[in-house]
Image 1: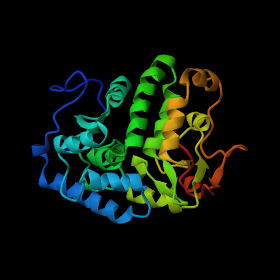
Image 2 (image 1 turned 90 degrees about the horizontal axis):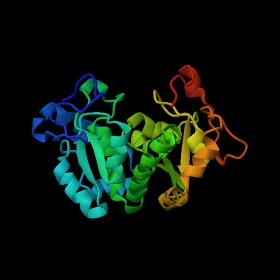
Image 3 (image 1 turned 90 degrees about the vertical axis):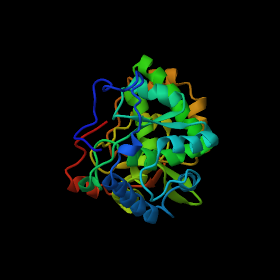
Image 4 (image 1 turned 180 degrees about the vertical axis):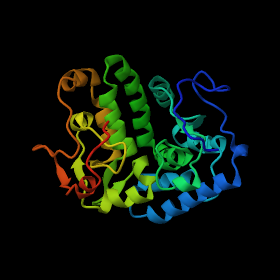
Length: 294
């Protein structure tokens, strides 16, 4: 079911005004399911001892397995009982206002297509494996589920306040590429890491990236890579603390404070940072530095 691009300017024919479409589960081919199984088996072997307990518990609770692409209706039924979330199919990347509305109402949008066999290690646009395997297990955790709903409501406000770039960095450095301190070690929970075999190793083991204690203002001013492994990872002390900071912060004055300030370049270490690992940045230098920023 993969096509060349899933970046659209308007809902395709048959989509609802909210961009949702039928998953079309019966339309997946045996090859599509085999790609899911290959990706799932690889990550299932790799993630124990690397992924957070919340993520691993979510895999079990939602019965995700090496048995083909999940049916969203069945998956949503299990997820709804746990945290009130559901998974809805979309044809690709959706506009920001649509994305935030779904999230604020505990609907997680997931692409219904899967990558080709020659794209196992890298896909520019998120597919059903990234969206469902990478994101949905964390939505089975009540605290993280509340955080993501709060983020959706915050996104709606950020659009009105002209602070989408700053808030999107919070999503990037937590939901997509976050690390958490757990039982005296670092663990991965961000979907961009847990769905990637290579970054699951790089994020924890490689000496190249910085690993820095989470600070909301710092994160929202920090540029990020969209084209390769991250040069910075931010580490939260717990999901409870992430939710607390997000819920208790009044973001309007925070935006007034940080919007006039300059962006913090990738790989910068500030004097006030809690540095867990000061990276060598050797990987990024070998690849020519940070070419694409967000």
